[in-house]
Amino acid sequence: MKPFRFGVNLWHAASRAAWVDKARQLEALGYAVLSVPDHLADCLAPLPALVSAAEATTHLRVGTYVLNNDLRHPVLVAREAATVDLLTDGRLQLGLGAGFMQAEYDQLGVRFDPGGRRVERLAGHCQLHAKNWTSVQ
Image: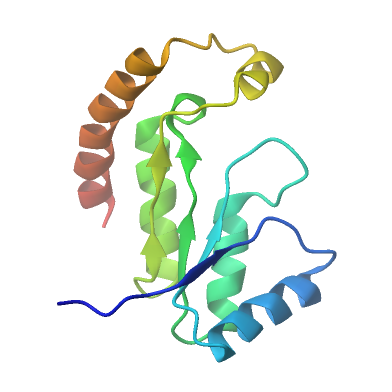
């Protein structure tokens, strides 16, 4: 049986110093994971924010909550994830999702398909993610 873990989802900081301080506080409080969402609103870009948080801490895991599959090419996600995992000493938890906010699709000019179709696309892309993550490591 694995121990129960707790995580926090953060998306904003006023400065690098504030971001680093938040990450260090979470680690000191015993949280296991700091996650960053993938939205187009007033949020930090998830992957650079995760690298910064991991660099400021010693064992805090970092993760995406969650990358929108339709807005990112799976081969590029695999490469970015492999790089983040390397730069964080294996502390990345990659979360992928099928997307749900039609406003973000509209903002980017991307068609917002029905949920079942988005989930099918995510399932197919997960195979590409796994294949390409392995090839870049």
